Length: 414
Image (cartoon, rainbow, N blue to C red):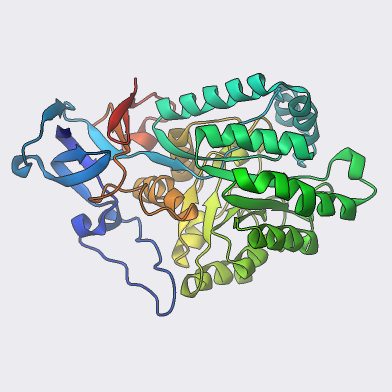
């Protein structure tokens, strides 16, 4: 059955064909994702969309729309691709509200509170973990997120890490093994033994349930991993058939970006403290494998830390993604709209750049070409705003603007 969504006041396709700009493919390498100016968003006014078999079958002016089996009038609202949240930690137990309160009274964020969540997650039943994960993914859907990545990392033993990933796989195909999140207390005096566990029995148990391998490469954090340890973890995961991602350069300058580019990671996430060499490496990676810089401004909001310099990355031609990093410690928000508003207000991104980064940018960070845009053939994942324009995402921060969410061509919310 085909469905015509019509009377769309503004349609954001992320298709440069609509906006009049195209992105060339670098010689010998992966195409750099199209930019996020007016052309990059591919805005169509007074538009319509035809959905069939869960895919986008047609987009264009409403006056030229073909017939369909069912017509849905969206009342002049804005329609855009479903948000792609490419970094989250939504399977866990317990909370860290007290830690948040302490930060708000002056305690610095060091990453050490992760141990609190590890203790609670190890003790929780599978039903408790599943219920938390399901609730947060439903919460994300209600806010327009149709694709989400979920990491493990709060088990830090073989059984709990595998259990987290089995649950995450029920919720999304984008699952990430993050056994190398921090070094647990029982291995504090033998870090090498923990790296051996992560790259041996833990990886063997978790790889069947994961698409990605990740590591918190942050020498400034005493419980995180240095460059050599992180390289060992990523190399083992890649050999096991997983694709690489990296947490890097969050708390201080460090080797995370350089390592991500070296191993061909799809994304390096946080990117708060970057050297000129880091920016050059990210820009240069688009003649080879292509590493996206994923920025997580809800973390800086929650930790009162400096925001990443998005303008510096964009000026260098580095594709930028935005994600929530939804987690119980450093940023417990599931709202991509909030992230977009923060990116515009605090990181000086334009509304168009921020929306592109929250949709097409997230898709690039997951190496997905079927989501994050509304070109013909894409998954019919759409968010209908109760607003006439995408500008309202930043213009009306904190307001619940999502009117409907469609996933795979079916209305999934409300």
